[in-house]
Image (cartoon, rainbow, N blue to C red; front, side, top):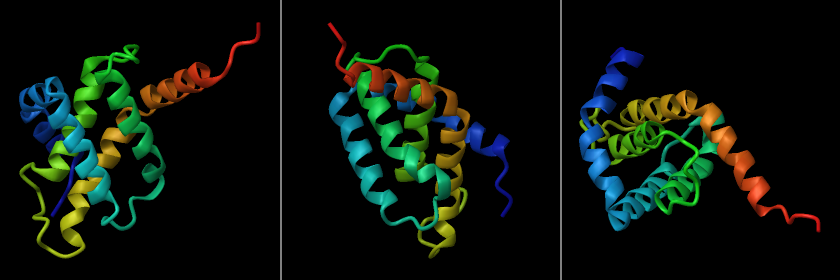
Length: 136
């Protein structure tokens, strides 16, 4: 099965209104983040993007808590949308197919991370500056 970026983007766009509703429900969003973290432990070979996943989770949490607002809501929607796709969405490749079933989930997460690399780097810098004590 061919996984092209346009098809993945189309699937993410289709779920954006559902994702926006989830983002307004802090408990539901936290449940999705925790479930996604657990499921990621079962997906082999997510490569270079694996290191960015905790940063993505942190950025979503900071945005929802209104601690970090220097990012477009569309960026956050795309990241939460990728998590929703991984957990609940209509899969291009059914998860019940061993190993291969995770390929589309990995592709969607990798694409969300790739598309939002600049925003994640900006968030990381913001977080480092926030956590660094200021000299008096």
